[in-house]
Image 1: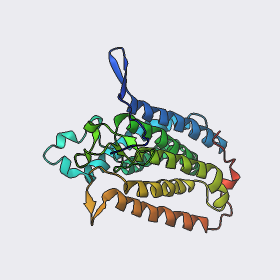
Image 2 (image 1 turned 120 degrees about the horizontal axis):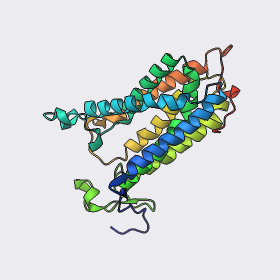
Image 3 (image 1 turned 90 degrees about the vertical axis):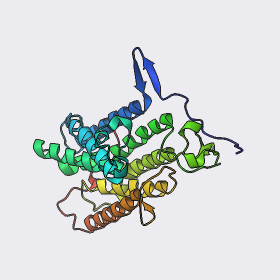
Length: 279
């Protein structure tokens, strides 16, 4: 296949540090978490929250998010674990579902915030812009692992994938859609929309429900990106399970936004009352 231009894939996915190897995928995830915590802390304090709350909350969100992400992966790909149940907790071998991670992380956050008596709507408002930025940074880890790419493509920004990482049915193709990059760019756009556009667009939307705007924005992007994915996935009525999940989540988030935006905002804080800056 002829190529005019393409994005090269790294020939390494870790850095040696003495007797250890630093996995760049993990580094990208960690960097995303740190940036998200910094952003959410500043936004939460702008709403009157106490310093350090987000940092403490992360101790609940990360483990509950990992458990939720793993459970979602296992439930949607259970045939891969049939007869090998011991592999279910082996998260270090890969297999995490973003939807389970969002649900699990949200549950962990709610438990923490309720226990500490913190401002739940305020925290959801603060994290609505932070989470998509964390996701965008974390997606760079897929580049080092040569994973989460789409179908073959000859576009100038197509991604070169080594033979050993290509799906069997696409061994004769060298370049593919960099779907992880599409998602990263989309998530950054969602964050910009939440910070600068949504507060003016949804002036009657109460504080806390900006989270629904994030969920809707992220899911709309995930829907069209899923259509480009090349990896094998279980299907229902000819559609990938993740596509069905996207459609359900879009319906729920749209309904939530419409319902809350049309309610009488009297006596409630709304996003236009908050300075819409990341810092």
